[in-house]
Amino acid sequence: MKAATSVLPVSSKERIALYSLLATVGLLVFKLVVGLHTRSLGILAEAAHSGLDLLATLLTWLSIRIADRPADANHPFGHGKFENFSAFLETALLLITAVVVAIIALRQWLGDSAPAIHLDQWGFIVMLTSMMVDFWRSRSLRRAAAEFGSDALEADALNFSTDLWSSLAVLAGLTLVALGRGLQLPSLLHADGAAALAVSAVMFAMAWRLGRRTIGVLLDEAPVALLRDVRNAVGRSADVLDLEQLRMRRSGSRYFVDLRLGVARTLTLERSRQVKADVTERIQHLLPNADVMIETEPREPRSTSITEQVRAIAQRDNLNLHDLSIYAIGDGLGVEFHLEVDEQLPLKDAHDLVSRIESQMRQQIPSIREILTHIEPETSEIPPASFLDRERISRRITALATGVPEMLDCHDVQVKSVGGHLCLTCHCSFPDALAVGVVHEQVTRFEAAIKREFPELFRVTIHTEPSSDNRR
Image 1 (cartoon, rainbow, N blue to C red):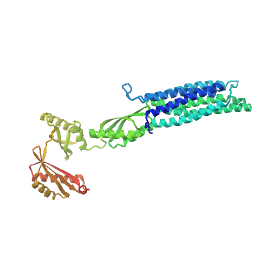
Image 2: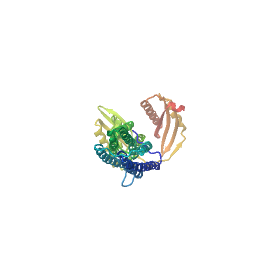
Image 3: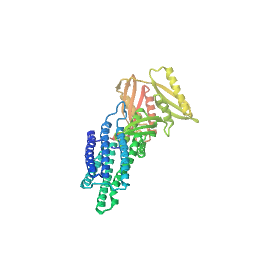
């Protein structure tokens, strides 16, 4: 189910409601004059129905003007509920009018004497005119209701579409009365009262249909099918572990959706923001112009590796952990990693912080037997770098690369001085299909060989790339 949105100016919606209001005034006057002239209860019931239509259409027009106002301090969700409340009032008026018409019609229908009806062509003309106007109005309003997603316009469209049937019933009643007089059949003279009763039944049916939907919206009832569609849309996001809460309400033509999503605790804040944007886009594709509020809760993934658990513990304190190594020690595990802390933090405080994190790791992962943490500063300053001409080093690095079994070439060798330290970077190509684990092992050995050859190097950074990347 999709909620339609307005693509036309708001003044167009008001203009349609205003045209309907003018048409209702004209029909009311016409039916009332002819009803008094003919003394037809069916036509007078239709006049009462048109009077109700006038009030309902006026409510629709006013509610549309109010509903289009922006949200304010007293109405944070906007003024859209005024449209729904207008439809609710229309339902109540329909029921009251239906009861009054039914009581009068039953009294006449069950009376002993035949009703005195002055039947002439005006009775037929007014009902045929009413049917044509109602047909035009119901089509125009239904099209506008779908275009703007307006409950108030849809209520009017439903009202005028059912008016066609009530007008047809009155027309049939007048026809039967005319036949009764012509054929001298007294029983047919009560057909006018029966027609008025049919008008009442139509109003009851319309009030039931309109009331069920309107009260549901006012009570924040969400359609089951729509909730299912939203759940399916959210579930297609790979990073959402669980949809823990979904609340939806409607105000006028706009939906408000409130969700709480369970996401992996290792997800970064930036990635969480991207997940929210992706879910919002999916929901707004289903419900255009919906107001979507999403809260994310960190959860443990369904299948969590030891590596992810260790990193997650460090991330709780917003600390960067790198160079993580996990290895087996007998029946347990050994863990080594580098942890970046504030460079201004005293050593005692840094050590206490690391000890607390190590304790959390042992509590969460009982199989850990040994933890070795290398504390290093998280620098805030960016040191300048100057590139150096190290032809000897470059030639020797290229020669060392020939001793790595799977390495296809080593290029872009650069040596630079960063903060008073010599740093070397290079690019190395490997076969496309070679596993990352094998590549990392060979690169580690290559890095160790470089440092043995040139102990003056402070840092070696090797960028690996597939061989196909160099052919572009």
